[in-house]
Length: 129
Length: 211
Image (cartoon, rainbow over the protein chains, first blue to last red):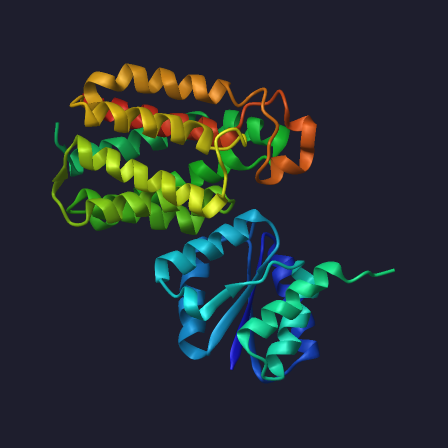
């Protein structure tokens, strides 16, 4: 089973997006989200990203990370470097909301980590109009 | 000279003092071209770092740097968290469990920190980021150390070089981070990350004198 880790600068976005993903898929994938700093303000707790990523890589076959702005991606890259687990983790270069939904669905149907990332990244080019 | 735990504790305290004193100034710089939290974030991170250092009583320079790095990762919040977190973690890894380090090891740790920053943020000199201070200062130090000079005798030059580099970010257009969303409107403002990096190097130098 794969995991999807949502990272946002905003605690509300993280919480809300996790809820949206869980509404689409209930099993076959582990979904979690981190947003905001320890005191609940805007930002990212990079230490929490580190411990969460460690936990998720231990309990699943791979983790796909999606983030919104630069600091979340840096927190993810930092955690991957520090844990030395690059083979089990991918950062999807995708818009956060649509990317996370697609990644969650794709992971829940048993696709490989590469396929999940490919599908999530494809949403960059999906027109809404 | 040899740099021991007392030196690094002094360094962290001086850096924290500069961040506290310039909290509003850094936040003001960040408000102009970013999200206006750099001063608040760095000050909060430094305070957590000092608290953790006091509670664990570290035995080596490496342990001090690791403790500060983890504190910054957990509590800075913005991109500066992973960036400065990496600076301290990389330095800690270079020092390993040595009880003191020499000029060469200190500069080699700073070089590893620079590589860490560049690896995370993919910024180059001229992008209007902390790399605009870090890279010229590390290159300067590396060259001088290889020619047998020591940090104490170069401190004046290091601080003025770092200061020049900070000022040089003013006319630049940001190409990384949230300031890059502003495009040309980022021109004419001093980069907050470069400014806090100036305090970093200034603190490294001032800690030598035992102030």
